[in-house]
Length: 347
Image (cartoon, rainbow, N blue to C red; front, side, top):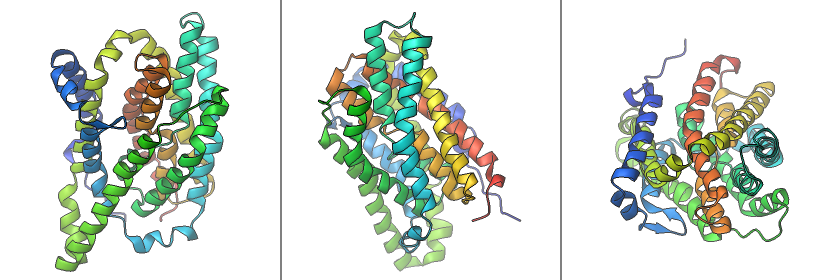
């Protein structure tokens, strides 16, 4: 009989805490604007250093669990990597374009001016072409994903991202002059993947050498049980303190943009998750595969939207809405993944 994993206090009521943090973030942005104004000064290449630190807190516990002996064996199980790559690069950008075009140009035509529809479409495409790099470690953790395999899935995605992002976006938007802030892309990968990974490796090696594997697995790792969720909640407060005014000033358009983004997120999750079920992969590989495609590298999408179209543009607003809807929807998908564990063979 499988031993039931203990659920932490924050994880048990995570949806409630997320809602509270979003509201607190928006309130801070409105009534204590000096806080986001001060934090925004600590930024390099459109990447917020305070947010990067909090993302380290989210990812570090996951990286502690990466055993590089198991990473070597990932090549023996290539199906999860194949699902990730095909879903993220041959399916996701094009379904995003199609769904966004349908809603912005057809269904919501009477509600959205043509010029804004074009910008909203551009923002949606930027989100669709940027699969998740950082937050997926959180979703993998919440679904009890295989830490080593998730790391390899993300690493492969990042390598493809370096060469495929610009051509895919340029093709879908029909323009040849798409400029990508390479410093933002490279810095984001370094901050959100490389640094926490190295920190996790160093901590793992040192603790095991000093106190042994049993202490590391049963005591040391458990000290960080609430760190991931705590980092997520604080990140939301900061993100929404930055974007609160934009959200409050555009309530109807926020809703209109959210509809296709939510549909796309759910669709892509079930494409990858269903494919993994069809291939009879274990749940700890299937769940992260679905999460990587469903969630977005919103730091990159927001940065590119601002650099291409401007801070006040419809494209930038669309990417911000991506941040707004992602966490609640991903938490819903996490719950679905955890409730359907029995669909998959035991790893």
